[in-house]
Length: 363
Image (cartoon, rainbow, N blue to C red; front, top):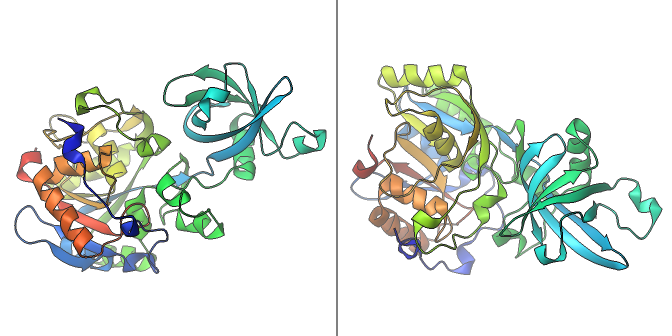
């Protein structure tokens, strides 16, 4: 399909720069398969799920993956900003860097301290550029490995706010908690699974009281989620791989719920993508551990997920393509037009929509 099919105009004032307070006070646009759209709130989510349904959440935890440092080559020093996006080993990460043209293979970058003074080595972190690819991507080999590298990144890094937020205001201490979900546990994401930012303990308690099982999967969201689709046709776009896990226990529980007539609801596109990666053509969810680069566009036949809670996404993005596959492109265009006219807040810190799988996406 042409990528231009997924374009739309969004006023700048619709981009949320802070989350709702409390989190479950966000609005929620209900998009049924057919019929009228519904203007509700995230607190109303339990009304739309039934006893015996499952809600699947992503328990990844965002790390402070944005690093700033300097590269020295002879007497020439350049400032380098890097956003880690996928771990490749105990001491290696793939990262997007700016300005990429300032780096060559073999260059050393010092994060958290400059080359000017030996005193700056205290608390700093060094990395060598061992591979350079397209779109500003490099592979960095760090001077620490394992837990020591994790601790160093925590010390010198900052929260990787999306560019549509960081470009309008600087990050601050509020973002350390605001950009982390209630379910955050397993470190490795460099972007939040934003649909789960809406959850509070009270909302979880209300879902459990209704008889909804809350199950966890892991997908470590990469910075590639923010990259624009530069291809003119969706067939020419390549997704960046992300690491994920569906445990044997979660897979068995989901299969049991489906066998009993329950529905599977995904909290966010990340939960949906890892579930679809773990589900076979027979509709059975299987244990999964590894990378997925699944790219969902209209025409995809969904195997696992019946209901999707998600935020409002960027034009021409792979995420808007996914929701268009789930509910239908015309349906999502109408939903987004309604959301803009009704003053819904968009993107990571914005409001939510609750989608029921359209007939075209039925398994």
